[in-house]
Length: 77
Image (cartoon, rainbow, N blue to C red; front, side, top):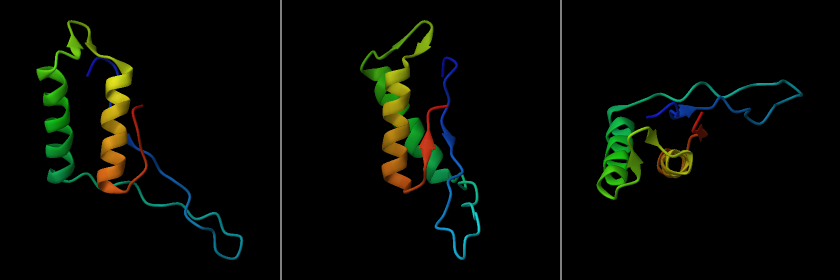
């Protein structure tokens, strides 16, 4: 993906009694893989990928779509 990759972020969950609990890492599933592969394939079909890889704005777009799809915190880094 040209240096950029999608990564699930560990996000803080509501702290009870002042504890700093964190959400466990996102669990990557076959559905997540298929979702990202379909989105990246669409980018290739539309010509968004060049010889050097994907543009950051396109990878960010896929990360945002995955976040909306899965409900997990996802970043492009």
